[in-house]
Amino acid sequence: MRWENLSPESEHSRADSALFGADAVTTRTFDTPEFAGITFHEIRARSIVNRVPGASRMPFEWTVNPYRGCSHACVYCFARKTHSYLDLDTGLGFDSQIVVKVNAPELLRHRLASRGWQGEHIAMGTNVDCYQRAEGRYRLMPGILAALRDHANPFSILTKGTLILRDLPLLRQAAEVTDVGVSVSVGFVDEALWRTVEPGTPAPERRLDVVRTFTEHGIGCGVLMAPVIPFLGDRPEQLRAAVRAVAASGATSVTPLVLHLRPGAREWFMSWLGRHHPYLVARYERLYADGAYAPKWYQRRITRQVHELAQEYGIGPTHTEMPHRLRAAEAAGPPTAEPTEPTQLTLL
Image (cartoon, rainbow, N blue to C red; front, side, top):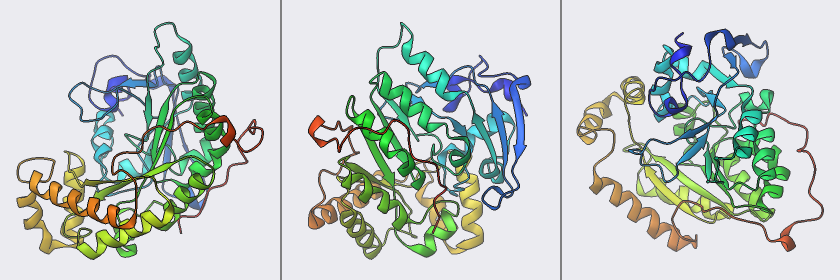
């Protein structure tokens, strides 16, 4: 593997300065059912706070990603290309070869305390999910959240993982001193579609339970309705079912995002499509003929439909959930010093 080519910027693109050396890698497998077939590459990274390239469409400048590769195994995941920077396979390898930055919490704490850091917003879950299954074993997020809390540094998290509930006490503590944004990704509630395109994720209804729980504890939680998958998850009745379920969960907002197919993800998704829905291959080739994104007219149509449904079901503004700070009066008793004992929540 080409470990020396992984750099801070290569979370999103290639660069020259290495993030860690090959001698810092420990490879492990665990003989437990939840990690069957998964290999973990434990590394001591040289950097953890990454600047987003200027050409990116992301609405933030800094990210933290404690993992690379993702056992959620979403067939459309745009981050698949990043595995090729290590000479790792962007298909099954992305799903099963997980890089773990075991020193992420201490690196972050050091960066936040540095003289040059200005307290900018940090986004997490933007490359791969920081609450994928590996987090149940490695427990990197409690240290990361504690560092952000202690420095009152604003941050946001996007996840499909129910394991975030383990860290609810820490998130509440952080929300008392800084802006905290939490969003859950639920693109559809069709169970058959979920099982085939997101086989390693918790069921959509379990993710919406996360939204309910955060709402009950005074932390507003939005839903990123992503991806809306053309011809498989975009029928009016499917969109209605998804928005209705999001509304019932108490989400503060719903934001639709149509599937985009970047290099690396495109090849893997189209291969999957050819096996499961061969009659759609030609339609996808036409729809995505101009690049990674669906045509503007299609994106606008989906956005309009979701906005109208959100209004019908009484969901708030249809934009990405903004950071939220708990008022002192909302804090339910003294904060818990440490998160509860971790449990790996069921996918079903």
